[in-house]
Amino acid sequence: MGSEEEKVKNLQRAQLLSQQLRALEDQLQILERRRQEISIALEELKKAEERGENEVYQFLGANILIKKDINSVKTELEEEITMLDSRINMLKKQIDVGRKELERLLQQLGYVTERVKGSGG
Image (tube, rainbow, N blue to C red; front, side):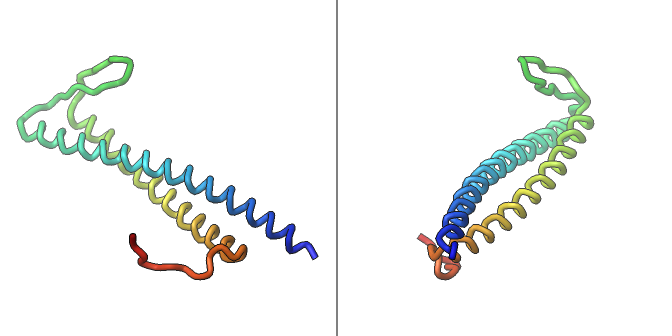
């Protein structure tokens, strides 16, 4: 009949999907941390502007700092936040779709009987 073969394929798909979800969640955490760092930097730039500063030093890597106009640095960081927000939202959607598919597979396999909502530990 092949139902055992189908079960094995679904189990393999569930395992692969679980691994992919972990990778996406790790990527999401990295992007969210970067977004938080940039938000903090923008707050610091705002404080510097309020003190009347027009230029700041920006770290380029390899121990290189350059003096730049505060507005250009703000613009760069705001653009990066916009890009990060877009990638974060895309990842969240991918994770949501993946979780639903994983849940469906696990239900088919008999590992999950019903969706538990709001359970806390």
